[in-house]
Image (cartoon, rainbow over all chains, first blue to last red; front, side, top):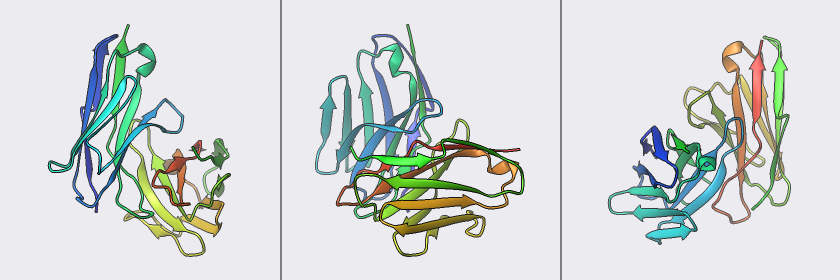
Length: 112
Length: 115
């Protein structure tokens, strides 16, 4: 089955700097790669996603890149703000009603 | 996005009792619902996949007789934690997909504490 690895597990950045979180996946059939932000005690919130027919997607300060050949995808947050502090999860799944497989998460701290 | 409602959001129960958690898709037909468990400072781990009208498929290491899942309609799936023990204390969260969507939509989650 699918296996998703995520790095780093923790990341501290100064406010205004960029943050990059990387994930790799194992199943070449996977074609959907969402990123979630989870605040303490709350449900994960989808912040951006990318499908396998696209190499890059951007939404304001957030961007995701996908390298299908290498089977890795990354989240980029620019101009970080304190409210970006949270745990971020990458995930992957394959076509059909298959479950998302999550990475282990990255705890991002943005220091004001 | 679609709306998935999960109840209760928080429950405390005594060891040995059972707890039922409901997951409802409010504005789409969820042919598949997934149940995850999240221990503190850990990722979401898939427990089981339930398809409407059929038996749930459990992940390795998850006891099907302890975590009873029912998906009797296209809008409702329930997870019952039977004979709960303190080690079952966790954050349980459902997600639903269907209606041709690839995305999964999460319920609010249920914080279960077994005392």
